[in-house]
Image 1 (cartoon, rainbow, N blue to C red):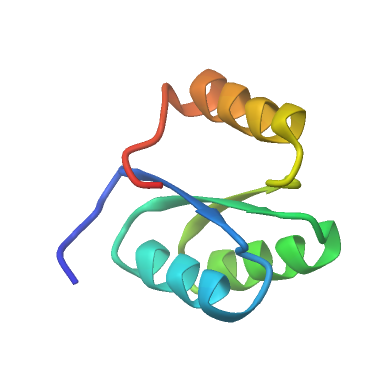
Image 2 (cartoon, rainbow, N blue to C red):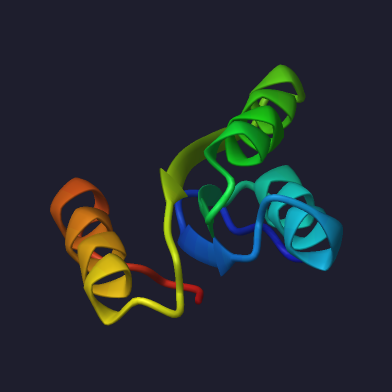
Length: 87
């Protein structure tokens, strides 16, 4: 995978399965990953594992079935990072 140093990647469904795997891969390539899913505890575990491997991650509990929750995710990513490079 090419270097993604400093790119902001938002991953939905990041608390398990393929979402978690994608988050680890992108973080390993240098991206700052924004982890989004409903389960805050699992998100934090993924965030901690990425950090333990030297990556950068932020966990934001999000329910993609809720328009307000998705809007809040987008607003936070915009506020903290200036937007996303990868979604």
